[in-house]
Structures are given as C-alpha cells and as structure tokens.
Amino acid sequence: MATITIHTDEVVDTALDALTSQDKSRSDAIRDAILLAYRTQRAARLRAEAEALRNDPAEVAAARQLNAELESLRAW
Image (cartoon, rainbow, N blue to C red):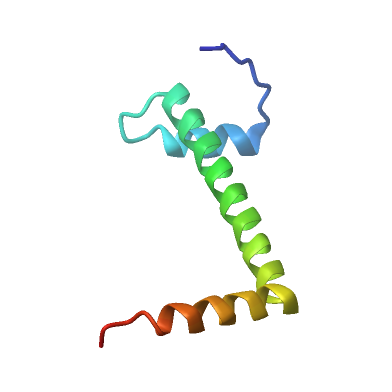
C-alpha cells in the first residue's frame, strides 16, 4: 500500500470536510473518491466499447447470426 500526498485548494477542502462529516476519515473519503472515479471511467469505457460494437455492421450481423443459431436450439 502506498502513501500519497495531495495538495488541496479551498474547494477540495470544503468537499473533503463534507465527505468526512459522517465519522469517515479523510483517507477513507479519498479512497472512496478514487474508486468511484475508477468505476465511472471504466463504465464509460465499457459503454463506448458497446456503442462501437452496436454501430459496427459486421458485429451486428455476427450477433444476429449467432442469435438465429441459438434460436434453433430452443426447446420451446
């Protein structure tokens, strides 16, 4: 585990004070913020990849073909 030093400004200090008002340490609040930023970035990247696949005619055709093949295997 690494130790990180950050320099804050008044806006960040105010936000950090608000995030630590519920018995949460500054370190916990910062860790939570980093994880939230990571998850948000990852979700945006996955959305962009899915959008690219959705807009790729070859991928759409392959998905439709696979769906047709799987449909023939359905028992009902």
